[in-house]
Amino acid sequence: MRRLGSASDVEGLVRGWREAILFEADAPGRARRRSLARYQQAGAALRRRVWDPLSPLLLGARRVFVAPDGVLHLVS
Image (cartoon, rainbow, N blue to C red; front, side, top):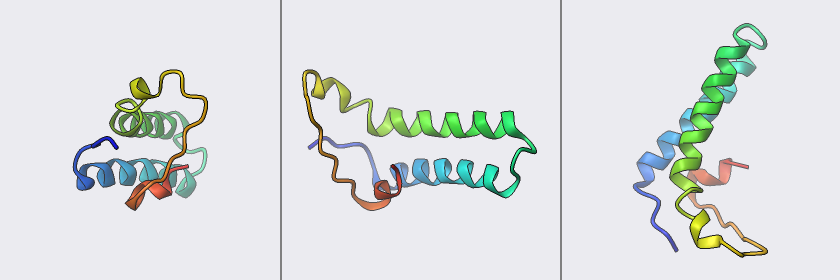
């Protein structure tokens, strides 16, 4: 196990990522570059918090099983 920070911080990052997805869904194509940049920034912040701390521990791993808890189950 690896601590990823407070649940509320992770929840905020997931919420921001989902809001970025919904932004484009609510106004498809209107602000494509802005919505793509927003989505990429939100996804990168979430990756830095959740995946990046784990990746050095997985060097050489052939298979990784992920059992997300809380709002992380909303992230594919």
